[in-house]
Image 1: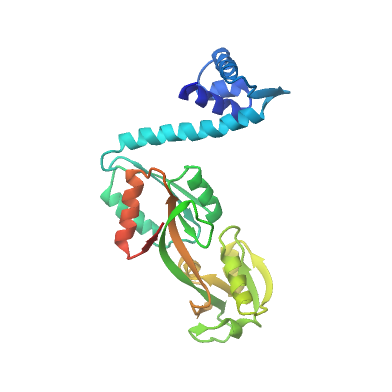
Image 2 (image 1 turned 90 degrees about the vertical axis):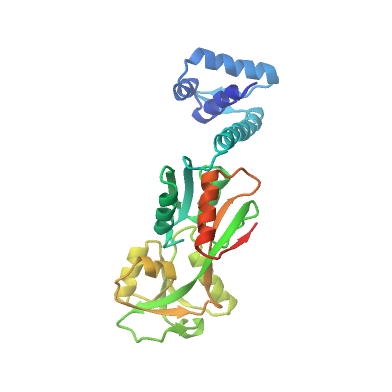
Length: 297
């Protein structure tokens, strides 16, 4: 078997039809069928079985598919590393960004673009857990995520910890600049619940840690609607600072919750023990140079 046959096999598994795989690979069907037969003969195992109009992968085929993905990825990484022995001037930055992670992200990209004007970009916005998956699968090299998450397979550059704020409609009494969870436990609260952001978990975990039973009347996954509801005094809420920076102009009071009680960390991650393109490394270096972050592998 060679790398070309492995790529053919990946297409067959993912498309589940010879015709669709051949179209994807821009080759005719007969030679693709012959390559599949040749691989099965060489390995002495049936790799796929026909089920109606589609192929189903056998256990042997699943094992080969796993290694084929790994080997073709290594080949691509090898090509990339050889091509990028230079300084990454003409590279491509692939990065994921969590919805609320870094307000300054556009400014960071602008500074990077000024330094490396020929670099192209692939930017994916998603929730933190999914971004970790994209980095593992090498769909993006870097991701800015909200912690905590299981990050054993990643190198992590901790960017900052952001405070949370208790927010109320300005029809309510102003409670002062900084408050505790005990002071707000009896307010009717509506919490952000956007899946995967970890915000809802952090808030509830803080209440639990201090053995406080808050009066939670609901959750809202849409931040604009959440801010509208709080502005109209439907209920109070707790949000990270980034939301306040991104959603300005609402008629609300914002009271900071002590960071020793409730805060969230944001970090830049990439895969451990994998080649990091020069372009990605240049972006990591830029972020390290912008602020004095701590690097933990």
